[in-house]
Image: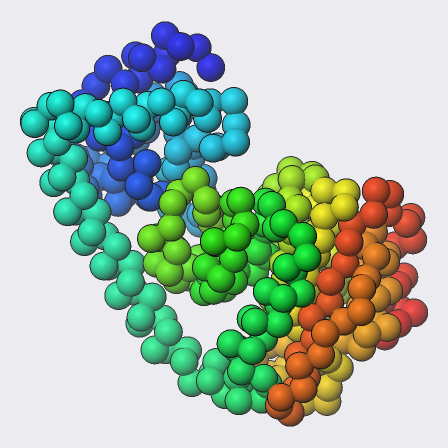
Length: 331
């Protein structure tokens, strides 16, 4: 990062408006173009200058490109913070700039409403399927309460929510984690999660598209990793847990919320479950093979399907034995 590049990047009214907007929420390039009333190619050029200066970051999600402020924990963090403070001061001191920013925020509100509407349509389309599954196990509120209790004995720190779905877990822990990365493979689900989480500060929540067996994240970057009702979609859970271990810091924790072993075979076809739950022995072996030490699981038996909460602590060195071998022994 070169300080001259930063000042040059901010030497344009459109880029000042973009920087102000990105301090509010993550936005797609098309959404920025909509707010600014400019063509997408023109906005892309401005975005490129901000990114080159280290003031913003691009992230591709399918055919969309999203923009956010640069990493709040990265080397540019003090400059990002100072830039936002300067822009806030400019709004107070410069009526013309303040009017532009206020107009931008009104258009931003319309984008928020459109995201909420799209999420509502998705929920309506799938509500029957989810309600059917919920009837089989303990109420969500009770599962959430017990999960919060299970993780309450240590700070959450940086948290990764793998398979975030609607973003509910990220929302649940937003007040206690230092920051949360919410990851999902499904683009439509990510857009639902974005609508749910868009009221939270952009420095606290980041949404990322990715597969749980190949996380697009650096090693040893999280203190807490969560897989909430995700692992039963994995035909082979080993690689997913190996990846979870890779991104967990030594001494960090993994929390897995999933079903105990059951025989509801129809869930394979009706809900695409690849595995019909897990025994405690299976999960303990999977965690051990991935480099975690498992604690005593928590069982919620308020329905036909028993929900389990398994917690594991990341060891400094993982066993060399492969997860695939562990699965063969415990299946």
